[in-house]
Amino acid sequence: MDLNNIQKYLLKEIADIDAPLTGAYNIRSDSMSIGRQSTKNIEIVSKEGVSGMDIFIKPYTVGETVHIPVVMTQSGLKEVVYNDFFIGDNADVTIVAGCGIDNCGAHDSQHDGVHRFYVGKNAKIKYVEKHFGSGEGTGKRILNPVTEVYQEAGSTCEMEMVQIKGVDDTTRKTVAELKEGAKLVVRERLMTHGDQRAISDYDVRLNGDGSSADVVSRGVARDDSYQRLDLKISGNAACKGHTECDSIIMDNGKILAVPALEANNVEASLVHEAAIGKIAGEQLIKLMTLGLTEAEAEEQIINGFLR
Amino acid sequence: MLQIKNLSFTVDADGSDKEIIRDISLTIPDGKLYVITGPNGGGKSTLAKLIAGIEKPTAGQIIFNGEDITDMSITDRSKKGIGFAFQQPVKFKGIRVLDLIRLAAGRELSVTDACRYLSLVGLCAREYIDREVNSSLSGGELKRIEIATVIAGNSLLTVFDEPEAGIDLWSFSNLIEVFQKQREEIANRSILIISHQERILNIADEIIVLNSGRLENQGKKDELLPSLIGTSSAVRECRGVNGGLD
Image (cartoon, rainbow over all chains, first blue to last red; front, side, top):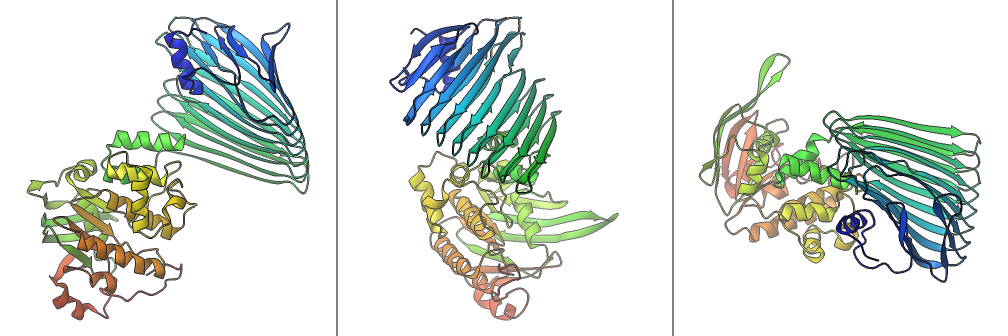
């Protein structure tokens, strides 16, 4: 598999890939699969009729990682991709996704990834997704991911979803349904700058007794950018849910945080927290007393916040 | 050497000027540990902030090693060698203890080296080094981390603003040892502690008493301390309502 410099750069940014991959993987570049490998326990199969893949992970597969990064380097490409993950009972795996768009032209480039996860009983997955845009073109870099998670009893899903920078427009939609004893942990990080726009919408349904969700979204809106965070948890059983939107606004940034809780069972225990504000003056002062300039202090505070 | 010349600081209080610091002049030579004491509201912490550049004086001059730093920024003062330990440690989201110690040291310290600073203040380093400097840490833990951080800065002049505030009695004894060790290893650096705790005053070379914004008294510890004991300028440690020292 020969990669050009832009492909290498994007893969490094979104999936920290700078060496040949081991384990199961599929690398998609400009709407084509440019490298794929299945393993004994993880099978990757192209879908028929639509663009995308089915990824089958056998029960009791433990400690393996699947990489499915997407890069786009041609201006004006638009695609919708459907990837379904079937995670067998008692498996424990890491899935690394992510999309990097380099747009050097005048046309918009857009990748809409629809990911569905069917997480088997007592299975455990860690899902890591990074989105990144680069390139000097006037065409927009647009990413509209849809993530659906269906968790069987006793399963755990940990999701780390990060939009680093350079994505002009994104509408993220995440839906999760949890059966008894299932656990969902989401850590979302969103950074917008320039005149970017990011919408992130969560709909988490705690359907089984003993299920729990902890959804934390941290955002930084700089320059003239806009973010809207809709975080909803429905408690339909004896469950525990927690959502948190924590945002820093800078310059002329604007943020609308809409945490929502819906309790449909008297045993449901749901909590939400939301906070928006500029960087605390005392944090800047503290770092300046350590010798950092105000701009350096700001960078440290944001990097920490979005870690 | 720090020289303060005719320093004043006035704030606007309900339309009228309120003098917090009134025409103070003093010198803190190299190689010495000075403690500034005095009753609450006497201007001690304000003077510390004026030295660090967090507040700007309304009159007077601050000279550090021969250079006028009166109009210098907080950052530049830090680069010139002035360290400042906050009375109320600042909390961050996502910044770890290790990050803060590295920023203070101004270089990529190894984890082992960074841990040494935590051990100095009696914290089991491995348990704390990767923790975020946030409200999951107790007031006493934050305070000790603050002191470790500032020590890591290895400043020419380090100002500690009420280091005992908010820490428990056991930690207070530990803190005295920390300052005693700093005193022993002072070389040509200097330390300025804002405190009215008798045990801290007891390790000073020299004591300065501020009252109502004025320099009321200054002298060698052995000469001045006996007259202060029993007043609000030299209190014995006692447990406050929130478990910390008053």
